[in-house]
Image 1 (cartoon, one colour):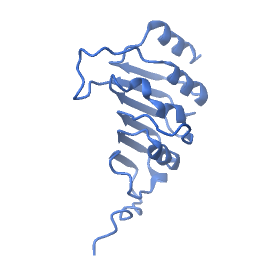
Image 2 (cartoon, rainbow, N blue to C red):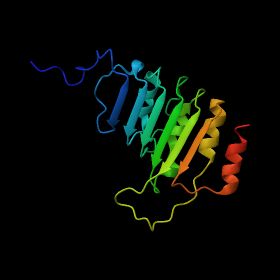
Image 3 (spheres, helix red, strand yellow):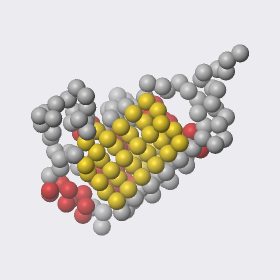
Length: 168
């Protein structure tokens, strides 16, 4: 007989890295042992619940995060997370609400990358990145960044200086 598709990999003692598209959410995995997680179209409530279960997570990559629909999803306190990379498109980068639900006290590397998605035009205007979510995440986390990358995302110089000054 074929194993149950929902639980067949629930006992995977060597699994430490996971890459998934948000299209698959009904597979039971040993999330508490995941150290690296990459999710495409993540950020909704199910992703936040998964993050809460990833108690040893060190590296998180979110590509094209989606806004959460619940007004107050739970907070994910990821005490071991050191690296966060978020890839966004022009239409979505000011809706990176997943950052509103994270506390990352060990975060030392943050990367925000802007990428044109297949249905978007390079001619579409990009509004400057709203730095307030980043500042709130860093303040709430009481972390100190040693690496900070902004790639392909417009941000005003005063806003950027304000963010960097908040790291003192």
